[in-house]
Amino acid sequence: MQHAGTSAHSFAQTGFAQTGFEPTGPEPTAHEQGATERAATSDARDLSPRLPPEGQLAASPGRRQLLGRVMGAAAMAGLMRTAAASDPVTRVRGDVDPTALLEKLVDRITFGATPEELALARTLGYFGYIEYHLDHLAINDAAADAKIAPLLTLTQPYSTLTPQAAQFVINELVEAAIYRAIYSKRQLFERVVEMWTDHFNIDIQTARYYKPADDRLVIRANALGTFPALLNASAQSPAMLYYLNNDVSTASNPNENYARELMELHTLGVNGGYTQTDVQQVARCLTGWTIWSASAGPALHGTFRYNNANHNQSAKVVLGTSIPANGGQQDGFTVLNLLANHPSTAQYIAFKMCRQFLGYNVAQAIVDRVATTYTATGGDIKAMLRVVLLPEHIAAAQPKLKRPFHHFVSAMRQTGANVTSTSNLRSRLGEAGHIPFSWLTPDGYPDKVGHWGGNLIVRWNFGAAMMNGTTGSISGVAVDAASFFAGATTTDQMIARIDERLFGSRMNAVDRDRVRQYLAQASPTLTTRQREAIGIAIASPSYQWY
Image (cartoon, rainbow, N blue to C red):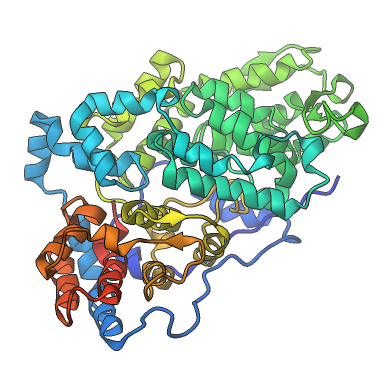
């Protein structure tokens, strides 16, 4: 069985990279350094950002000049102002009164705080809003369900998928991720799905027909359950086994790829206390964990199989724990149990969750608090999220740079865009280097300012293209500017509306003044001028952060 290889992306690290918010903590940098050495490159694809056609960014000299002032030489100063916006007074108020932090909480757990979502948070209160989202299955998600209903491949078995074009199957899963991020009312659930998708990363161009079941039965089914259950589901995922070559790992020829990533990326972390000998022993424990072939019939084809004939039955020692001979499939379950209950796993998962929702440099005391909850609850994800999202933690959270997917989705959510096709969106996400499920190496899309800070042009152009002219120039994405500005007829009213809809009435004063200046250069009632002002706001420094 031939597996497609993987290679690391390369992006220019300029622009946002000097914000001072580079991460610290147990980041798996050793994996990043060694990933390309371990991976074959036969199927490498260039997903690095490409500049759009010249002139697309600005339809008029006025807008081009204003963007130059907003995002050019002053970009770093603006970003630093935004990054420092969480002042000590706000934090003190938040410690006393969580309602002062509602807007910040909504920012953290959604793909963009809409007026409706903010109103819901104010109605339910800080803790009620969190509990509402943790009970995700009770949330009516009819709008998102309607969008993904035509995507039949999402629920089809492997044997039904394989006769279809691979790219069609891939496109439908990517389309579903986009629609769910925009339209789902289960926003915290979708943000957690995003986190676990990166944590248990599988490149869809490699796994292809296996990935839809992994998304459905592993990630989404266990996203708000327990980490041990999620880990066990991933270990038996055909997509994961195929992607990391465990499906061809046998007693006579054990493959160490999955064993290594299981410890380095999925559980213990690179500094979690395992050795190369542990990698070898875990690989032997997992021999025989494979996939049913077509000869098993359509019902089993492409599903998990344990083949005892290919399992190494010798005694093993993993992390100092003896595993007796002739354990069969139980060897693998023993390993998973050891890893799930290891203190390093508690720390590493706590670190990853804090990073997702609180920022790049979360205090170790907060990570320890979440790790203690992991240990006390057996890795209950909802229990850990309750700790992560405590008011004092949200109050102390530093700004995070929106990754391209987050940036694009927040713009569509907050402008009320009607999305009827994702074809052009997928292309733009490709230009930004952030198509869902398409990071080549097992470490998942980076969550670092230094990685994403260089792709300024695609950020500028997204808002400009979405609001270009009278209808926009992103096919399948339509923003009704008349509805957006309904009742706002003066320049001040229009900038207030932009501030409310895109920033929750917290727009940076300098950015606000510059967008207001653009509106005031001509009659603010001109449709194109109104639309361009929204596009400029989406390109502004303060909109890049949450």
